[in-house]
Length: 131
Length: 399
Ligand SMILES: [Zn+2]
Picture 1 (cartoon, chains in turn green, brown):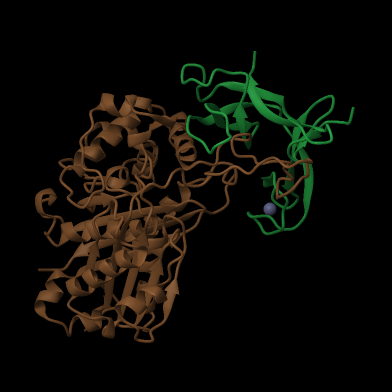
Picture 2: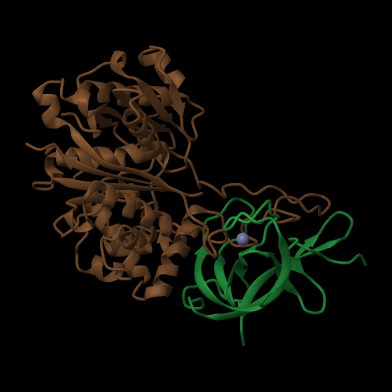
């Protein structure tokens, strides 16, 4: 069996799955994408930092109309992970306004996306309610 | 003595809605010739043309070929939903710089029948997972790592405000939409001018909770155009032209400064607040002086946060402000008496000029059935995701 691969480069799989950010060594601003420079202070030095795996939902929506091929409804959220904001789907939760609310405590969880032509599994992340 | 003020001499918008027999240049030409006639001048006097059309592959040069080729510079501008405001800003800058006496700003779009904007297509997964793009993603991320659709993004922006300050609910956002649809019944140029009950709004098709279909801006066709003039040149024109001219007391454009989270969920707040602050300062006018506001209600959830961002209410007080009735047309600060983007419609590049047209028309006392009594000062606001924010403050000419 080939090793599963992360759906995005800022997701680390393994025994303790977590997200990593590029942190500006000059000002501490954090980014999840490949960087040319810091958008806050323009410095070019970055280090990898682990992001907390537990957080709080700061904003959400339940998407009922999306592009063809995207299963709906799903919950899109902004999660505050100890001061670093993360965009993600909320998973393992009913996509209803009764089940989701701002301020709810969530934790990182993994979700398989599927296998490619050579049998390699891609694994994505989301956040699920803390229990 | 002439000042460095810039004035709107003529301005017009086409009927927003469906124009199946007109192409994008027909619509732009109709708005352009309307604005020139309203101003009492011709293409001959124009010193520049600033033109915006996001989806139509049209250019200012194509418009010139239909309405007048005089050799003037054309600035084809593109700034998402702030494109029209950007065209106005370009004319304003050129006149302030002494480069031109007259400027023509035009925005046009054909969007009737367009579906979801942005996030509207998801590519197929590739046969072999290969990381690509700035996130090193092995497949499309829309719907897998949050949403890229506009209704979803702005829904989160509204709920984020509720999380910060409390008091929001599905019903509250629906009530904002109820107001704008009620206002639209007096606007003959609106794409939709039908009143909805709160129940109808809340029970309509859900797009992205809490935004149902009537709480989303309406895709439609439309154009708007404005002729701007320097103070010195205006003083040489007829008394009637001077009487109907509307002063541009502030023309401001901003982008979002970096803040934590701004690259995760677009922050439409700080750049709007900064644009408003600069505009009030330049105009020497405060939010309490405004007789009307046209703000960017691309979704009902957006209107709420902009009450606060434009400082129409104390910080954190947008819910109370709305519940007080202040933003209805008979309230303290009428907002979107045109019906707003939810009912008037949102032909993207036209919006930032059409909003100014609405304000200017009230200041001129020419708004017909929906005229606000004795309107002297107004503000027009647009947001383009990305982000860009345009704020214009307008004043009636001194009698
Ligand atoms: Zn930095």
